Image (cartoon, rainbow, N blue to C red; front, side):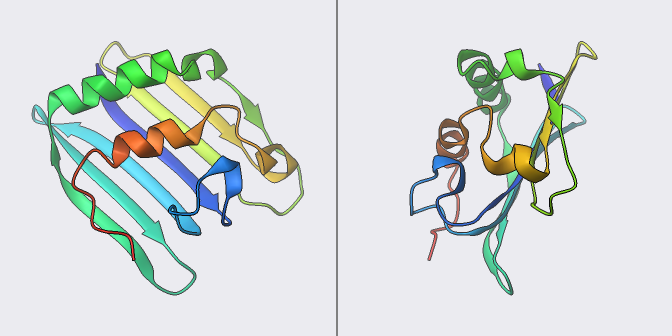
Length: 136
């Protein structure tokens, strides 16, 4: 059972194999459990404007499906992956805290962030199952 989820990365237009309908910008997807309910925030920030801003309650079933997707996509095998060098390039970070107190953390900055060790597309497609605002 996920208690907290966070995925943050920068899309430079096709970064990480994202199709063109996912605009360039800084992506931030967070889910947090409080008092038995889940709150999801999904935001895309362009250089000087907000591309998308979604913030509302989601079901426990939706969050359970996300946990299953992380497992099915093999993301769990990258737990503890942390790569960084001094090259100035924004990276990506995935953090999941489970009710069992287990953590899943994957992070890359610099040259290591040129590619993502897991596939972002299925995760974004899953996020889009919620009624996200229409992308311009």
